[in-house]
Image (tube, rainbow, N blue to C red; front, side, top):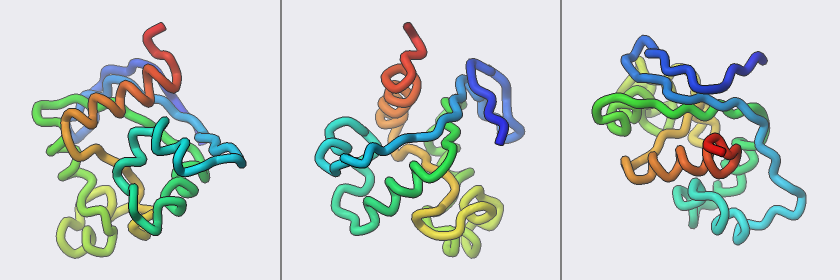
Length: 137
């Protein structure tokens, strides 16, 4: 897999400005503990009581991840519409042209994560690009 990263500032065919991308292989240390992950990773709030929590963490760390900062008017809602329902089976019936319908297989392997709220989007961009990789410094 070839990964390109950096500040690309180009528009994709769906009208989103791809402001910044980063491709990486997440590494979860053997001493991983949920408590540590909850404190360090803002993504952990999405599945705090789910029995699938560790399945999701395992999936996210099983191969390359492409993080993208996308911009558009009402970017969060627009991108969520492009992603579709979290369950690919439901997405296939309700929104067959979405990313999860086309590329997802299960609710854990659903092809894409997108934030729920604009405020969370800002936190996730900060986490992936400034904290993890110190883009700004």
